[in-house]
Image (cartoon, rainbow, N blue to C red):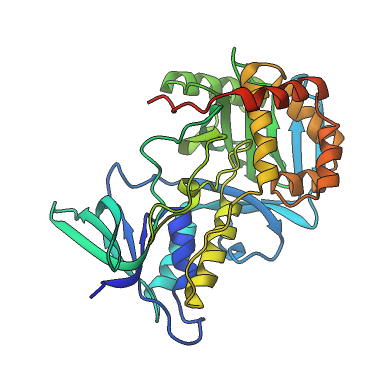
Length: 396
């Protein structure tokens, strides 16, 4: 006998989103039984983090947002600012702890999921479905069997790719003694940071009030920095660029997001699927993931609740992935200047159109118009080069 109809491995954005859609009192008829497996407290459980995305004003998670904005700003290296209105969309900031509480309330109610804390060692097909092998906090081996398993753990190694960059960042939640931020405008990219020898860097400012903001230093490059490197970059940005002096730091966050044209398989067996970033939800050229996770889990939940075989859709269209591959290669090869490229894109393309493009919802005619706003010759050289490049295993 299986332990459940569905086992979800990992309680990050993808695992929690899928559990949220499958559990709870709102579904008529028989609901599938679900087990959500999360790592015990310790180094394997992700730290608190922030997810950002854009959508219409009335979203399903609006009640737990930390903040949202209807204006986005990009600053060039010389400080010139471009401000764009996002209406009818809003740029939204969701803290992981608030999302976990929202999902936890649903899972604890009628029709909720069973939760198990364990370190998962393998997820594999078995004759009647899938089996998740794990060890609990005491080290005891447990095995969970289900008809379907959805694995959101990051892969141990990235699939082969032609280009792989890392989006790596450190952020400080800061509080200032004087009003220093405009809560109406989020700074999406501020290129007044010291640019690395390879790739690009920018500041990212999400104001929560006139006195509070999340301030991040972000790089797109091949290698991450050490702790001293991030702190030095953030001190320079907060003190010398933003003029904040010595703000009080109330919290920190840090992360690394692979930006790659690798192909992420969404199916790992007859009954085993990969979801979230593990299933290719991260947009290769930007690192945004949360909105694609919502599309992916919404489609999977619709299949499962209807009793159909789940068919995870591609998180991003083939045309979007192809354009991202060109941009990544052009950035990595140095054919285009990243700071100039993104500054020009936000300056020359209406914000609403650009957000549709970045979300993979633009029409082909819009994509062509946006393409004409980029450095055409370097991009065409990259288009011609890509078919000749081999996909190579990611470095360990």
